[in-house]
Length: 160
Image (cartoon, rainbow, N blue to C red; front, side, top):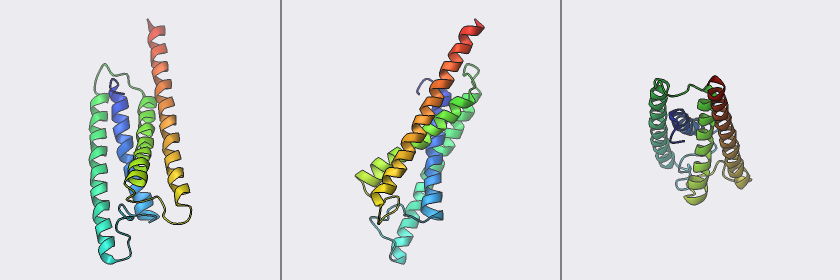
């Protein structure tokens, strides 16, 4: 990943957008959990305000990560020596999104236990499902990147 600026850019962009989707869909639209709902259950206005503050901090961080990804993408596509490959960018984006889910699952759900995808009945199933989606997205992204790399290498060989 370190040698290909498109992969780096797509990964960072995907990681940031993975956080945005998590926050928007699971925190705000479905309201399945809040960022630190295991620490401050939203049973009082004060606890809800604390969780809302942490949502804002979380979204600020994902905004910065996404902005960095956009800057990296802009720089990568403007470098003459970088082979332009939409498949590479898309694959790296999926790898980044999947990596967000994996990171969030391992760190926030299992190690820190600050929240779960959906607390209550079937809590573990929701957490494992979220983790599995991350693995699937990352795997699809990895396959796309490898496929694009092989395709670029074949094109180089045939053009020589």
